[in-house]
Image: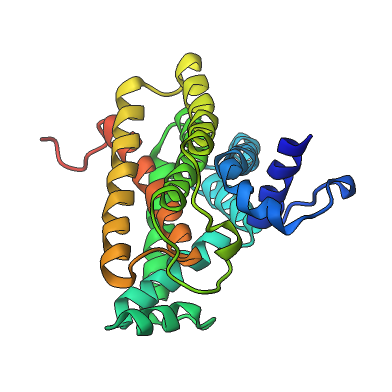
Length: 260
């Protein structure tokens, strides 16, 4: 029952979805809820994949992808997209660690953030639109928990860069056992998509590798520029690793524009 409460705490923190009243709330639970971040991704994946599947019955793939992406943004309250935009503004416009943190804390969006989020969402929608329907659904079910696992890895390995912040309650270092639970949660939908034949092992391996490289690259920048991570950094990792996975799945299907 305690683990179930931790899951619902994570769901309440990372999405707009309602949770049962009996769950209650204890601030201490937030320190342990990050282990269920990938499981929240499974819930978001079910929503986005469900909207895509329903829309694709009646509408072309690009429209189905736009509706699916919109549903995911609505379910999460654009939590991670906002973090990505703030990270673009902070790291694009800040020259010192203090200035980077100040810019990311500002609720207004600047040129770097606007350009970054437009390019990211356009890339995400374009990649998913080019995938066959079953592969697109499989990619959604794998990418959402996987990308949240990548964000969780920062909590596991790095220090929080602020004295206070929206991710501070989750910023306690995770144990290896807690991170292993997060890994298992992300692995289950991936293996399920493989067993269904909707995703191939090479596509999955390439997508995981790309997501890990994107995470490592961002983590290096975070440590070098601000000596740790913030909530916005977690959102940026989630978004970039998600898109990296879609691109690798698409590339594995030989959709290159040039016949090389």
